[in-house]
Image 1 (cartoon, rainbow, N blue to C red):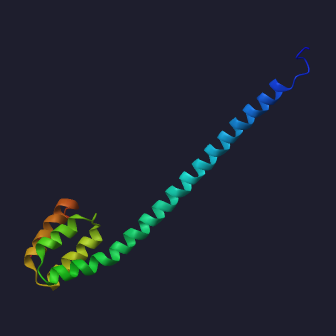
Image 2 (image 1 turned 30 degrees about the horizontal axis):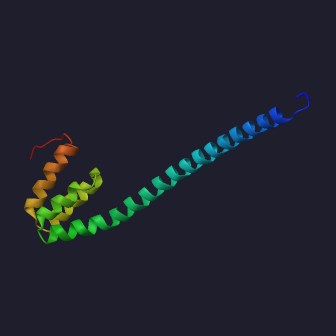
Image 3 (image 1 turned 60 degrees about the horizontal axis):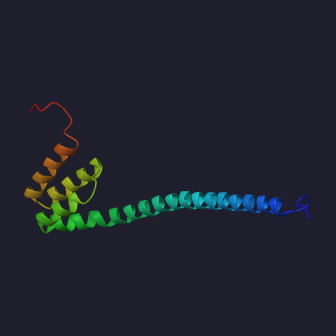
Length: 122
């Protein structure tokens, strides 16, 4: 008997193509899941940063009022500080009459952002 009418090579080809297509589709699904996961993680990270920011100011204000300057410095160094937030902290230290913290925050402002050049005449 000859193998001329045998379908084994044809079915093997279909099986191989099916497995390759399945692999391709699974890779696409995996990539889509990774992309969505990145978007989800960045959204969660932003939400968490907003949450921390809401808790950061009251914590810093309390530490400045209580003159817990060592703890204030530790908390300050845990967060990337915007210039606007640093200005708020300077105002809080001034209102709390916390000279040590005020001077330290001024040093941080100078190191991070510098001071605007302006006329210093009286």
